[in-house]
Image (cartoon, rainbow, N blue to C red; front, top):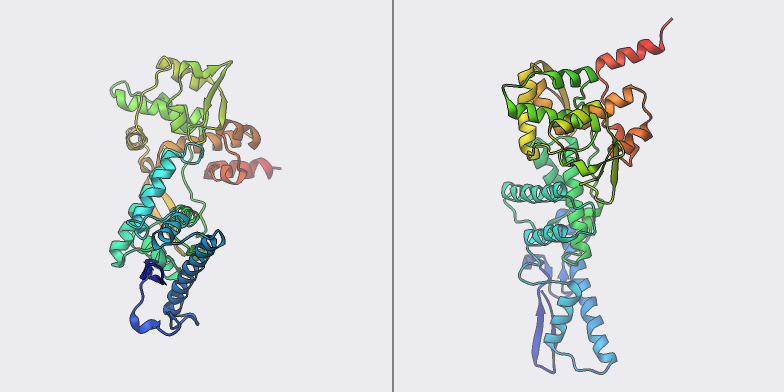
Length: 397
């Protein structure tokens, strides 16, 4: 609590800082925590509390002086209102970590000016909230902004690695989302704690995901699914993705008015400020005309489920290895080929096939919409046969 006595009202002004401390750890003479030096967890928490109290004290003095300068009477209610206004703080939920997270998600959903606030990204923010709630339950300690320190961070990382089995890439993405939320909470005065800025985001991992060859794409496209309409439609959508390089959110929504001068021209649904111009080819023309430019509609979740059934039915049931890194541990796991297939395999296959045909990166990136060469190159997945061919082509006598 921060407090001060108002003589003109004969009352004490009391304002909650949201911080808690045991009486034995409090210096009643200096009116501050009694241990603020050293590297112990207690000292770290005490320094945080002292910083919070100092900020409230400075703000209180600033408000009082402002009213004195204009010779206006100042009251407890006025000070309280000014502090609330300055901190943009609603007492009922300001200290509730997850209530603030809900405000953050609502802001992201309503902020149409930021192209990064896609449906997928917002869904990830919501998952991150669920993950933090699960961590809170696991750790048996209520989450609070005052507890977002190195101890929290290390415990959270350990939970994600040992309990949830997150790979390095998943861990990196979720920590990035968490830091985005904490930055927003700081900017909107829900917290003054900045320890999270020193959190080192785990390094990502280049995964050995699958990319199909041109011959494999052709085999999939020519497989007879006349006795299974659902799998035939899912297969056709997948091949359309392989032949355009688009995300499923873009290629599954193509209509006849998106075809102009031999190009598919659409606004990227992930980045609405970006326009994609992808030339038509034999595969994309045939598939679009087959459905009269009214493509089958599936949710991404259902599509990813059904496309595995497609590859299983074709016979892609061989075992392939997948290498993942969990923390500092590198693990190899065996998977059935068809279980490794998803909507993103189509985009990865397009990029790999085009690069193997020596198409310049800049040209391919214009089709896929990539701006970063670093991100783009992560999609390139030459298989073992490709690598052998490259070597023979260069080192031949």
